[in-house]
Image 1 (cartoon, rainbow, N blue to C red):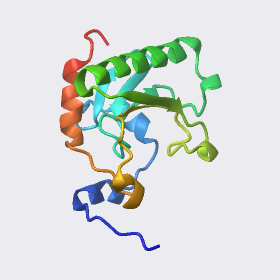
Image 2 (spheres, one colour; image 1 turned 135 degrees about the vertical axis):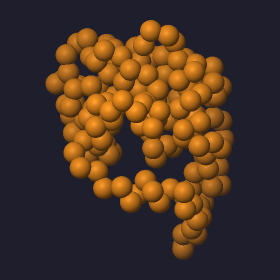
Image 3 (cartoon, rainbow, N blue to C red; image 1 turned 180 degrees about the vertical axis):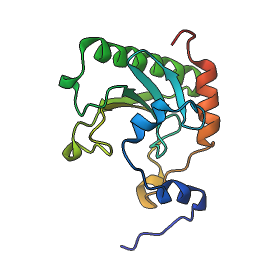
Image 4 (tube, rainbow, N blue to C red; image 1 turned 180 degrees about the horizontal axis):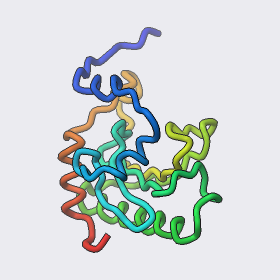
Length: 162
């Protein structure tokens, strides 16, 4: 079966960027949170949108320390990551009203980690029927708003003090 292609020229800028070093380390150092799609910062971790999301609002909770797996992080960092994930679920419920969530780590390339050297937790909002004909037949996902707008909406709804 031949795969049909859907032309999405706006995505090409993401594929043309060649990253030097760790993208998570770079974005946390910069002071351009909105440009880097950072929604919230904690003491030991931060929350940002995935530039290649599975669904609208696909967030990642990223450890500040450049470590590849949970066992290399201290207990306060692991605890903060779970608290930030909980806040992410609460904010996404409020802003997007999803029917459910996938929340989890992909540790190592064999487990599907795209950036295996820097641990991050995915928080993916899900809706009943979100695997529709576009995803199933066209292997394409349609997102209804720009990532920058999603970032602004989630930042505005994020609890103060984090």
